[in-house]
Length: 290
Length: 346
Image (spheres, rainbow over the protein chains, first blue to last red):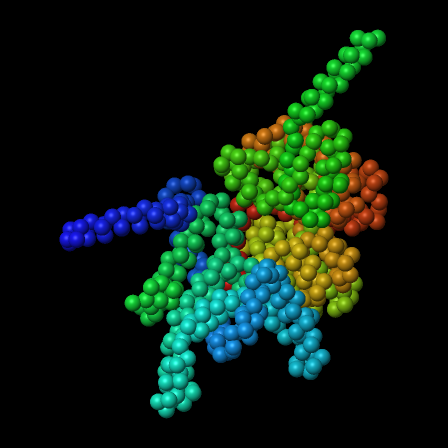
């Protein structure tokens, strides 16, 4: 075969691939690109139905909007951080167990997924409130004398969100750790590295793609949380999604809420872009690494 | 004789055929014990007496109506709404004008019906307290509610602006009849919000729903809260240590409206006329402690004196309260809500 023939074949194959993926592309177009475009468009429609920047101006003149975005990112970052601190050691522990025991642990990690998010959130309210189980037990055990405020504030919100998000961090981290060849650690030990040194210089770097994948997923999901901060935050932890709902009720046009969605989308994209400068996102999300 | 029988048979058939073609009214309310009470006291009996067949649904409020009207797919004939959201929806053109030559409101309390929404029940925004902590005679005014030296303890307050500013102004020394005049400017609104700012360190929870008010008192999570009187009666029946007072409470009402372009507008009007009669309204307090909007309902003898004493719209209780001003909400709610949000996020 000559070079032109090869090129023709390659061209044909590309066309075929494109043809095969076109239903998926259409689907993405219909359910993602068009609605997001519509969201952008609606956010520039004012209360009187004409083109206007009032939905964005409001976010600048009213200080509360800035604070709400700040709270949203603060809560999401803190949740992600705590999830890493709890989830990574747990995933590491599981990866060192024999497969059968590890599978049991995995089921325990996944179990909360079968309970609705709403139920789990209210369960935390019952446990953490002033006369809840935690306070009552702690007082009867003499840990503290007066009921302490664990819920209806930032603490309660974080407890609830970490509980819900933890599996999203553990699963990819665990997957990445399982894939690490044990012989690398043995080789490090063989070359005289202490267990700690072997972990930090060999095991940890190899596990980071899974860890970043999990952390990224947790962070992005947290940005859109509604129920948990609404129930456990006591009305004082106000995140963007809650403000979107109240703006739909308050203003008689969808633009007021759409503009919030647009800003959140742009900010999130910005965070991902910054993250991509430091981390190989393609590898972190399981795409082909080079 | 024979011809008469056959005529009767034909007539019966015709009647049933007409009945089968009769449109069904779709009524949407808020569900729960509230809708159950409405169904037992108003909807079912009125349907039986008029022969109008009805279908009950629950809905998410005026945003649902806005969606239906803006897409031209209106399925609801009658909706239950808060008075404030109804007046905003009316201003937006989402509601049909009500025909008060069909609906008789001559014995209604003044102000409990509007061009687009006719009152169905009256409720109060009250202050409630934990009786274990403060006894049966707890705070007796909004000034007491805001006074953390006289009544030390945690508070809960509304997370939205509706019904939140009026109490703060009364606590700040404004006479109930002057409240809306003072609130008629950004400075007045700021004055009320500043009063809440002062109390904020003692506000443990900003509540967002009626169910939450009951739960907060039942679990003794806070020592005092604002809220809707019926919820506290229900919580008390469930064993909560809670009491409330009507003094300086905010008198508000829920109402019935017809969405613009409702499929059975005229029939809906007739049905509203029926359920606004005192003989239906006087049954509502049997199922929930919300009062009738029709004053004549107190005169039918169905509501006994003991029940009446506990209802927000009984003449004695109504006299102690400040009726909500819909005009104020139509003019200021959006601005005030944004200012309130500033305070919440600080």
